[in-house]
Image (cartoon, helix red, strand yellow):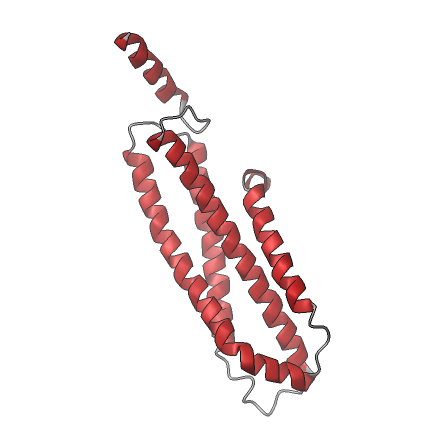
Length: 185
């Protein structure tokens, strides 16, 4: 677990900054009463549903893109270290957590709480704050996944596309390239 944070600290920092930024904007609204919270929930429900739906779709697309990334990695002439595949696995794990969280929130937002007469009015402010905090968190998680994916893709571009000497290249591949260059000289 510690390696995950160490290896992906920049992506995690980016996600945390986004979460804090959106969360700060939300909490600047101040306290809202139950009636105000119910009204604000009613007004923002479509947008919250759209956000969760977008994140669910993006997460599913990212999983498909990871399969493409793996096929490009495996089909490359160069041998990549296990670190690259661990990086892709970390993206997939974090992305699945994001997918599940967004899907649960999407289902939660489809419960007709606002239409219910049995919910005490003071609960609406709690539901409102939990809703806004959770959407800030999943937005930050989405940014984290995108930054992790960006890092993996830029590493592959540097290795495969630009042919750069990279720490993710297996030593066997580097040794073979050095030998080929010696033979060509």
